[in-house]
Image (cartoon, rainbow, N blue to C red):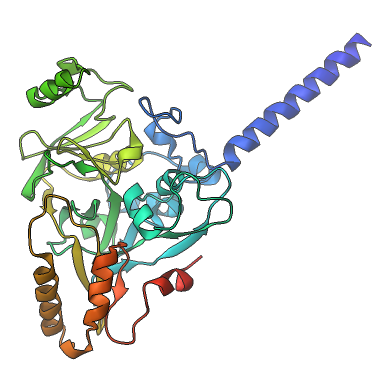
Length: 378
């Protein structure tokens, strides 16, 4: 009797363990934030935004040679599906808008991390969806089509207005002309991320954070004092990987609060999801060019069609942006030999006003922005 009881207990224990494992791998692992965030803890290399099979196949990139790079791409197709794109021969628009359906337990923060999106760009693309309670079965538009910034396609290009980083790896390494894009958090009002051109001068793993005097002062005044040096570990806001720039005091780094990716939350530095900065750390060489631009309105083309992508301008951007977009559209029309009278200026005004971050065709008889979700890839 006792023996049978023990055997039964062991069997029940095994069933419970198997059930727990299955549950862990079928919930898309939403408990993925680090210390300082209210939703649990993890390490960057777990890559929670891919499914169990992808996680099982994941390995850290340690070599940027073409064969190794391509094998990593092949092994992580789900990761690269919304972040890696082959550059078009005749245009500057990449990717495609997709639609997914939320589950009961999802938030837009969960979905943003899962598909390598920033929270604000996902909210902008879904203005009628509650970011905390989307609800079961709600259609969520993924803004995974992008107009490339107007900047040289070399090294890293940061568009602080769209809160996106674009990395152009050497064609000899990638095997073909590609761009890899990730969402970023940038400097908040009063601590704006500067524009300009610089380069990666150093890379650090598990860095200490030497807190600038201005940040120490701000935290003291807010009753939240910081130590002069924050050592490596889960409380370090730099995360585990840092790209140091030629601009003194400015970094591209990870974070211990990933919910801030895609927002204006930093003291001027550029922060990424831990898994994204890990990839850049392993692949971006020292000396790589870094171009930082502020382009809320982007003009794109594919063949003889013109698109625009509009983001809400930064609060402290005092430029006449209507004149900027008009000049760029006229220039695109001239350089691409597309008649300017084919541009629907009413649609241009509507797209810039709504600022949903989705590339929209603005030649006449083009799709309304609401139809993008209907025609998006499921």
